[in-house]
Length: 273
Image (spheres, rainbow, N blue to C red):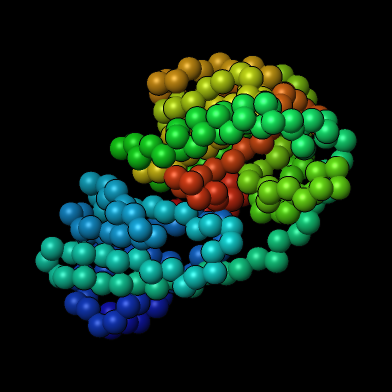
């Protein structure tokens, strides 16, 4: 079979004529959605660059990155292969028309906090952001994720939020409504890099590092059952559903990041392997 036809059938993003053996070892999707987690395959030992970062390459050649909510593309991934030279691959981005979601009944002091509270929020969010910058060596990101709690989906990634009539930032994760105290399970394995029971906006908060810059955050928890440094496996109970912080009722907010880029947990759940 001709290499070009094989690439087409496999959905490999072609980027100019290359040797068949090399082409078969560099695999990225030709398209990705806003908010997607993208996993690619390169020859072990290659150097991969995307969005100003040098991506960690696993011993078996996997790399991963996230596509931002407002990314328009096309994305450019550069692969430097010691044996074959440099290739640039282009990935088209499928855009969304993000809907608006209105959230009423939020305590006014959390929508427009006074200066002292605003400074506390800034400090707390800086701590969480620092935890998201870790580039751990574990490859849990490559496993099939599971939803951390069952229940009604009450909020979806990417929707523009209006709090008590005032525009806020876009929703950064997946909200699942469930009774307070419902156990929350790790959607994939990882290492706990942040755990605090009392952040002003997000209440009980846990960050779980899945490796290579991919992390999950769990917000509004009523109870936290893990500590920073703990290694957990998929299905391990990390805490319980609550309504702490800026919440109008008990639910789990599950967010995911690639470093500071927010990605859509629902797309991660739908990802095939």
